Image (cartoon, rainbow, N blue to C red; front, side, top):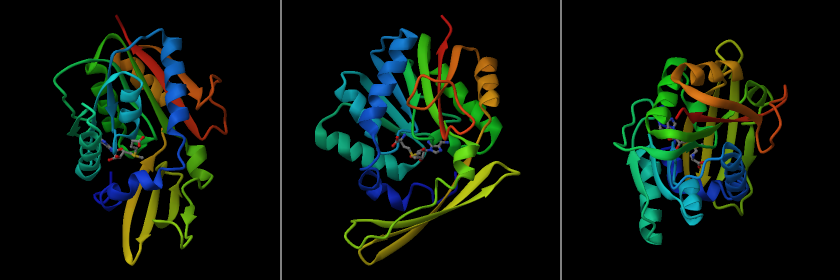
Length: 246
Ligand SMILES: C[S@@+](CC[C@H](N)C(=O)[O-])C[C@H]1O[C@@H](n2cnc3c(N)ncnc32)[C@H](O)[C@@H]1O
């Protein structure tokens, strides 16, 4: 992750994410869990950001904990949980090395967080982190952006409407050779202006599945996101679902 990623933007993240259909994501996640026949009580939100999914899952009745590499994102997550009196533990940790000192019935990581890990060895370490934090039979579900999405310029977005609380212009530079996209993000809030650079890597589905198999995950499935169909050539996002063996 580039050094300025998810720093200045943290305070404005929830405002920026207002159009994102997190509630639909919750329904989809619950559907995938039911297909896995996993009935979790405890959950870990890996790369939880400001805790939007953690809070929604807490409202669904699950016991939540989460971690994220960005201290600024975790600061916002903690503040929100304390204002709402939600008993969610949040920690600043790198997914590659995280140690929450306990196990969970389910681990999830949404909104292409794992694409921010651009070194394949490190991605495998992050997947191992999920494994070691799961109880036997526990569920790991996560999503990843695809090379198709990056090549199709999905990161070229802007909202320059003067009425918007936060205006932004993002431009992605896709490098086919390294399978990485470097996104220059410019934001304006009133008179204030700041920039962040986000780098994501696309991983072939087979490579991710092989990593999961090598780690020991079983019942590994990949879906064209928000459906129960197989990934397509033009899938822009993939959901992976797997279990820790009993
Ligand atoms: C697009 S945000 C998604 C946040 C949250 N999952 C959501 O759905 O709103 C990606 C998050 O991944 C986090 N992240 C990136 N690399 C990470 C790493 N190696 N370990 C932990 N968190 C990481 C970033 O700090 C950021 O908060």
